[in-house]
Length: 269
Length: 342
Image (tube, rainbow over all chains, first blue to last red; front, top):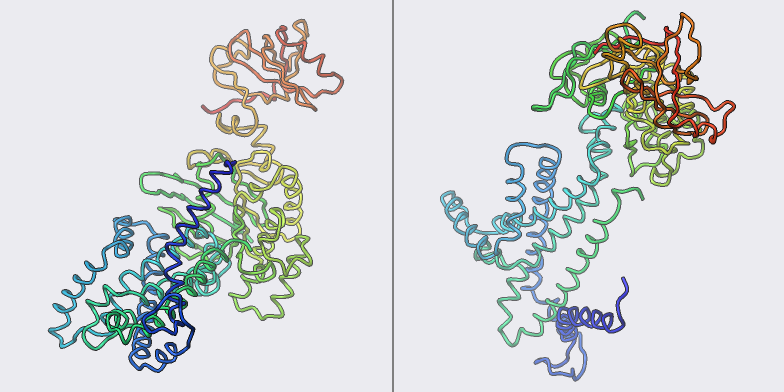
């Protein structure tokens, strides 16, 4: 398509403006984590690693980080198993209510977190409390899994659509039973989709706060919860900034990997 | 070896309200090159998939070498398939693809390696073992698919439109090659095609499918020279039917009759006809010059139309074109006309 010079310049400006709105604030967070001024004076009077050191030595941060990782791993594991199973069921079989099930699987990612949070909170308390179980790590993991399943489901479904079932038929035709076919053909075909979906699920869970607030109970403090709690304590501000900066870096990596992975592999390379 | 390689008895398959196969009985002999020919939707591919085990018949049985395999899974049957889209495993190289069947049957590594290399050699793909399917051309992929199936030495090899995805020139090459490979390995080849020329060229016998049934089974010559139904006459070659009043007037017989276009001779009106021949007069309405031959469409005076195919032995295109609109007499030998079941 041929665009005039002006149109081209304007489109570039729109792109630059849009990206700036998103990324300049993030950049400032990153810079401020090295800002020598405790109140983030601008321009920074100097740079220091003091806040990073303080964050590293803070037991609160460390514990919250570990809690977040556990929750994200748990939610990702559930999402991988359930997301893959439901993707196979819906792609490879047709049954009554298939479209409805598909919609029900995808819906949680669109539901407002506060709705999911309140609903789960009520349900957990109603169902678990009679058994003497309170809110805790388990309920956080289940809460996160409700929307993490979607990313795995979508990735695996797209891969299955693209590869079709003829490879599995070919494998069966050549004498492989169902399990061998899964091990040698199906799993290698969907491996990168699983990884991509899993990484996205991990990232989604890792920075989730709303559902977490309603499902965590008293003892469980994930990193986002810790940040939110310390945000308005002036003496903690520099450390909060460091944690935020670290989170930015940590969430870029899985998203980048997931994007690279969901492109390749299945087709002929 | 009295049992046929494949025996289908009363085979039916319905998908909901769609009756894809409505009663097929077929015996395919050991070592035969057998074609299932028919238009798309005629049920031939469904029959193939039932023999492979991908579909379970609604009723009827599939026997392989005398054993009933109707309820067995694909991996329990001694057949292998060359898929229309080849279905090569894209994450494995060519050699691993060919070895796959031996690998899952736990053939020792050294032996399966040797057999896979031999199979690749038999399809003229030595040295391609390390490539990925994505790096091969369509014709090469087709041959890998063939090697991957043949290396297992199945009782029957099923081929689903094996040449459908290739261009014309490659297709003609592969027709010859498939035939010679089949003669070499001696395995029963059962292939599905919608291309009548392909079926006639390669097969020992052909089954013509229509609307889920077999219309006729026979050698290519029988199918072509003596089609038993109007459908076969029309699907395999040009039908050229003479029926109703025209049949009365021209042949003096009741019924529907067919004459193949190349059996007709385009002659002048005054041509004398001997007792062994029949003839009909008409007007040439169309002349189609097609290189080695010319097609004449002749509207008969008695009603109906016949198409005559004449080899361009002496004539040039100028000569034949000038015949349009002229009156001619079509002459043919009586043994080349045959009755059609309508």
